[in-house]
Length: 368
Ligand code: NAD
Ligand code: DAU
Image (cartoon, rainbow, N blue to C red; front, side, top):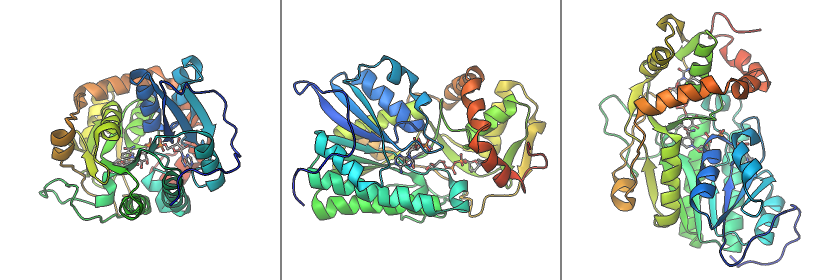
């Protein structure tokens, strides 16, 4: 692999960087849920860093997720580029015109249920898009490439199994999880084959503000706010390991700065709860009746339990989650109460077609 050479730029970049005090990080998927929190964290806590946010703005990408950044940050510190990570020309043009030192790859198709309807966009973005980024990073030469993977690559735990460690085998069960496992292994291979300084994180279920309301918690919170049924899959006893998104993005920053290239870091808060417990918790916070919960037809290949052993990131990097679930959930519910316009606009748009399609056979009453 060669170092930086010249390619014609097809993406127009505005704003300039100060070569003396800047270091430039490319964040992909920065208009999504986790990406928007990471962009905000970096701009707040790394005053000498410049962030380039590459996002295609799919249905899940929303510039309103970072209004404070768009409106208040000096353009020299933040640059938004609307581009598809699968578009090699646009990505190479970006690397060609900027001295990118760090890459954090969050851009992905992320909803398991949608991957069960059509896996094609998942393979395209999650696998081919990751390959394009890895190739560009190798070609142009960077200091660190953080690939954000997921605990879903491990598959499912039984009720008494010990939590997944970084050595657990990869046994993905949904097309989404399989596409993330492929990307995860490809990132590892670029480290082994070309010496690209790749770091990989595998995190559990995130919750917090700005999460697209197709996901379990924002869907259940917003449905409850509207006195609509909460569609709980199967017997409601599937378990997820919940982490506040702020804790996750702090872990990402820590791994990016201090992690050892070639290493994988599980990230989680050790908050394993059944979906039924989480649904009841939300209803109790909102003082809504538990009768809103409706057990519905299960998701195919529904992983029974996720749980993560996070000893490595704690011992090697000193990271620890700081937001207890009880506290984080209360604040999150309040956020959705206070930001009705944000989620109502989403739920009444393209999402309503998806909702009708997916929940038609599941819910007795689906809004027309
Ligand atoms: P999200 O769906 O909220 O956001 C994804 C973002 O990626 C959107 O802004 C979208 O526009 C952008 N995007 C999609 N395809 C693109 C493409 N081809 N080119 C450029 N941009 C594109 O996702 P999220 O929940 O914030 O997850 C971010 C990352 O973290 C994903 O890689 C996901 O697999 C991983 N992850 C998520 C969780 C979780 O609980 N949400 C947990 C562990 C890991
Ligand atoms: O574990 C990390 C993963 O967490 C991320 O990699 C994924 O991008 C993210 O979407 C999430 O995957 P899950 O499938 O666990 O999340 P989801 O919010 O779709 O569902 C959480 C649990 O709630 C799961 O057991 C399915 C259940 N569920 C979900 C929905 C949407 C329901 O019971 N009813 C629902 O309507």
